[in-house]
Length: 267
Image 1 (cartoon, rainbow, N blue to C red):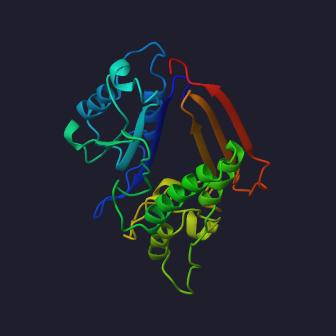
Image 2: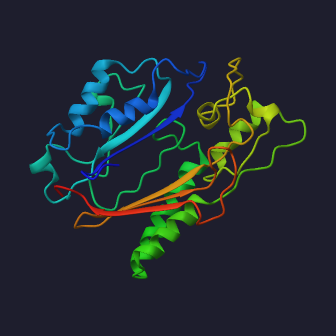
């Protein structure tokens, strides 16, 4: 996220019947190219979506990119030439294939390591419902910003991942990741050395013959939790909690927290 209100988040997934693509094109570069747009630029979210599609979205694999510029809903259309946030994916062949979110107050949406709108993933369905209910209850109880952050962190910490059964194939077990919002630390050197973290996150249960070196192969799990709150005046709180460090070591709750408070420029 930038101080001008631009926000971008990319999730990957594997298309059925295809290998997981790694290294042909950087997914991080796609996110950064949007966040590094000049603060003075008048380019709209729709302009960026069209540009991405025109450039071609092959060479990345299955992915969904959620992005847009957060602005005062009362003046967004007249001042900034667009409304809401966009989701562009590798399936977007034209601007008509772009999904538009948050165009009206009260919307709640969930996105994970599958295509947007996939309701076969329990973590997506349950996560969306828990966020919607949590925000509603927080508002009804007139809770503070800190209390709302705690509520949302509780949602991000829901662990319903089944334990791996004795003798269960690792690729089959990876399908269970769709059942839990939080992925606790799992794996071992012998199991993880053949998969990157992104490949695991987007697992669809199909076998793969891909083998790469992964320096953090001993542990896979949710590394960070992020909550972003923006009020009607553009006052923003960006809260990030790190659960696992780069070496795969678990960090005690609260010791890996970072918080930034600012007002979105040009709100």
